[in-house]
Amino acid sequence: MDTLLPKQLVDAAARVIEANRAAGRHIAVAESCTGGLVSAALTEVPGSSDVFECGIVSYSNDVKLDLLKVSGDVLETFGSVSVAVAWSMAQGALEVTGADTVVAITGIAGPAGGSEKKPVGTVVFARAEKGGDPAHVVADRQEFGDLGRGGVRLQAALCALDLLMPSAPSEDASEAP
Image (tube, rainbow, N blue to C red):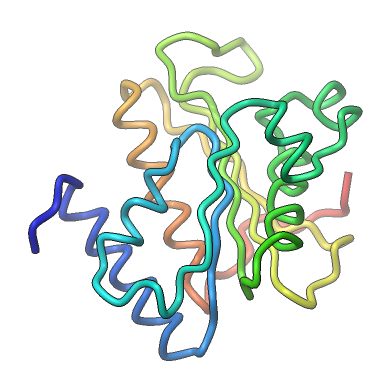
């Protein structure tokens, strides 16, 4: 297949499209640090429009607030790279799309922007399901390390694709923030 993206990423996206097509499910993503990389990988797959509803790149906090309806208080209290914000992004994207499953991604790709508590390479994921209990948070925080901007984004995209599989297990379930 002719693609600009790494084969590993496109192969993972193809598995996601195939599995969700077989399950009769539609998917969407709300991306921040990956900047549309997950959406790009999914749309590299011929016929992905059968399954892929929407990709929202909510890179700025304003878009998180306005489009995905993330609370300003949540952003201020927890910061944009947090379980609370990722969960809110996923819930917001679920509301504005026709998807059965949404995965949200927010993180610090680098080379700057990290801190002691949230170093470069910190990425938070959340998965929301249509009809799911919004009080049951399904989220995961990964520390990929400073792999370089491209490396962090690639690892985050691969992790997000895993979470889009119909049988993706919850990595961390906790109460809503």
